[in-house]
Image (cartoon, rainbow, N blue to C red; front, side, top):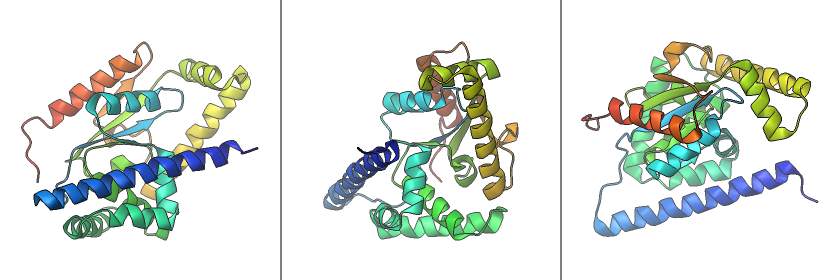
Length: 240
């Protein structure tokens, strides 16, 4: 019998295989049409979600409404830590786009106080390469600190403590005490991740363009609110 982890890894691999095939087909079509495929700094949405704030469902609803891919933290982490998959994602870019990604990363590490470990280099390369493929949504993994705010709408979804605990209970069938412990654990893990790798606080309001309290908002309403902010931020803004 397969474990949940094994099933998740298989599903992630299937999703990525399909996405890489799509990228390769798009590049072939562009080449036939002699269309440029260089990195044009597409606009993206980055979403940091407090556990239990419904951020993942909201992100996928946005992706559905805008017809753009959603990369959650599991997908990004899988690419960043699996060399074969990371190489495939990077190599599906053409040489001009790849050169632009490398230039962006050199400037990023020069300008920002990021950790310079191999993991951080793999993570930033992964997120920037996915971004170079076109408009998309990133959930977690510090994408809002990797992609310049000139090109992304950085969002954080939050909700009151009781609301978050109740949602975790509903999704997992945990007791209230177990759900409270799980929310505390995940909050701590995510705070540590951002502080460890980006030397920032996850709750810092200046890290985001928009913070959405999802309590009392449907998934559709929260998604529409974020889409409106996204469109307003980049209205009449040309690629740079």
